[in-house]
Length: 190
Image (cartoon, rainbow, N blue to C red; front, side):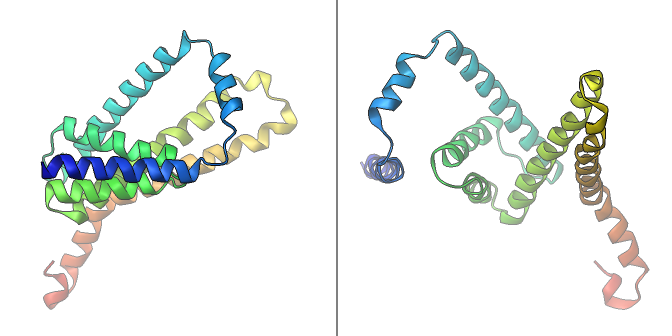
């Protein structure tokens, strides 16, 4: 009974937030968008979104497992869906990550490791996007006018920056610990 009341309260708050956020949307224009929709494509879109969310949950579980935290992929998958709802329907892109951090902190008992896993998950996504950002223009270089070629260095710079940050996070911890061991006394005891 208590769980049902809690769920009903959450649904009511969600509906209220959605009503407040979308109260100025023209309902007729929104309806016309659905009337003109080619209904062959939404199932494919949702299938791709589902697969992407599942793969993201598997990647997230690998980051957690590397830090000694075991959470089933199905629970991470549910957390991803709720976080995606926050990102899509609420005016924030950070809200979903904050939800994921809070949720994994509660499930794992370690807010620090949960935060680190979400950070690494985001960072690996940025790394992948920046990689694609410079690979695809290079693949179609013949279609890019020569005067625009210098702009192709921008995604390369982003990729190198994200790769450097990723390497520092992944490999820098061991290097930092080795340097700390060289320090005398208690400073090197970590």
